[in-house]
Image (cartoon, rainbow, N blue to C red):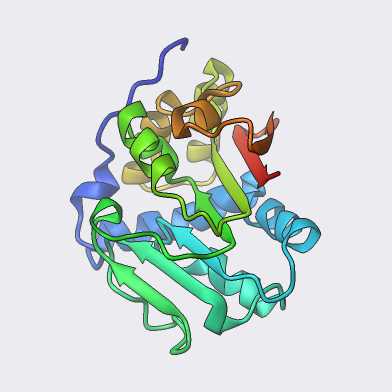
Length: 216
C-alpha cells in the first residue's frame, strides 16, 4: 500500500437522515472509541491550546467531537465553529457557529485551532494543498486524526467489523479510508506546511495516523 487511493465512500452518497447513514455514524462512534481519536484530540487541546482560543472543526459530522470538548470544559460553546455538508445537528449549541456546505466554497474562520477527525483522507493532494493555503494566519495549532495506510490495519479492520457487527456501509468505507490514509509526513507535506510549523506525526497500534502542527 505504497500509494494513496482516494475513492468515494458509501456514506458520502447517502442523505444525512438515511437509516444506513444514521447507523454508520453510530458505528463511527465505536471506531473512534477503539482508535482513541477523541481522547487524543482532547489531550492535545488540554496541553497546547490557550484559554479563550477559538476552535474550528472541519468535517464535523454529527458534532460529537466538538461537543465533547465543551462538555470537558476545554472550550466555550461560543468559541466553536464547525463545517460539514450535513445540516446543523439538533444538539448543536445555539452559541456555536455551524456552516453547512462545501468546505472549499467558504472561507475558514480566523480561529486559533483547526481540528480534523477522519476527514482529510477524503481529499486528493491538490485539494489538501488548496486547503493548506486557506488556513487562517491566526491558526496556531492544527490537530488531525486520520487512518494510517498499512496493510495490517486492513486485516485488523475486517476482524473488528465482524466482531462488532458493524453495518455494511461502515465495513466498506473502513477499507476505502485505510487505502486513502497517510504515512510518514505525507499529510503535512500535502497541506504545504513549511518551516514555520513544528510538526509531530505518529501512528498507533489501532490504525491511527496522528498529526499535530504548532506554528512557531
